Length: 361
Image (tube, rainbow, N blue to C red; front, side, top):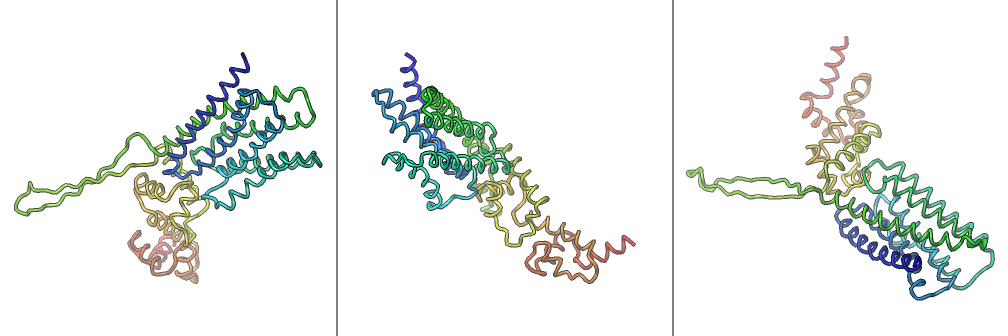
C-alpha cells in the first residue's frame, strides 16, 4: 500500500513540476531573472523521483539506474549555481562547462570503473560543497526582492544536496539505511518541487504582471482652429512591469549604489550596466526611473554628480582646476559640467565657489 502511494506521489509531483516549469519559462521571457536555470535545476532533480517511479511501476531493481539517478544532483547543483550567481545570461560554453561533472560521473558509473572509489566520492562531495558555498555567498550579496534572496529556498536547496550526500555515504558504506534514506530523499525532492515550483511561478507572475496597472497618455490636437469642439484624441497605453513593492526594493538598492558605492562617478556607466547591478532588464530599469522615480537615467546621475562636485568645490583649494573637479565628479568634459551645473544651480562653478568662500568668511 505504501509503495503504491509513494509511486503515485512521485508521478503527480513530476507532472506538476513540468507544468510549473512551463509557467516559469513563460514568465521569465519578460523578466530575464535567469529563472529558467531554476526551472532547469528543478527538471534535473525531477529525474530522481521519475526514475524511482519507473522502477516501482515496472518492478525494476537495478543499482546502476539508481546511481545514475543520484548523479542528477550534480546537474541540479550546476543549474542552481547558474541561477544564483549569473548576473547576466551566461554563454553556452559556460553552461556546458558546468554540465561536465554530471557527464563525467555518469560515464564512470556506466562503464563500471570501481578504482579509486573513495577519491571519486571526495571529488563528488567537493563539487557539491563548492556549489553550495558559492550560492550562499551570492545570496548574501543580493538585496533585491527576488527569488535569489529567498532564505527558505536556499535552505531547502542546501538540505537536498546534504541529504543526497548522506545517501551517497550510506551507499558507499553498504549501510542498511540506504533504501530508507533514498526514499526520504525522493519524498523531500517531491515536497520541494511541489512547493517551490508553485512559489517560483507565482513569484515571477507577481513581478512581471502586477494587478492591471496602466498609464494612459492623452494627446489632444485641434484640427480646426475655428471649432473648439473638434479634437483628435490619441490614447496610448503601456503596462507597468514592476509592482510597487519590487520597485521600492529596487529604489533602495539604487540609492545604496549611488550614495555608498558612488556609482555615478563612473563616466562610462550605461543604462545596461545599471540594470545588471539592479538585477533588472533595461526596460524595467527605465520604467523604475521614469514611472516610479519620475526622473531619467542621465538626470539622476547628473544630480548626484553636481552634489559631489559641490562638496569638492567647498573643500578644494583655488589651485584645483574646475576641469579636474568635473572629471572627478563623473563628467567627461568641462563643457558638459558647466552646462549641467548652471542648469541645476543657476550659476557657474567658479562663481558658486567664490560665493561659498565669501559666506564662510
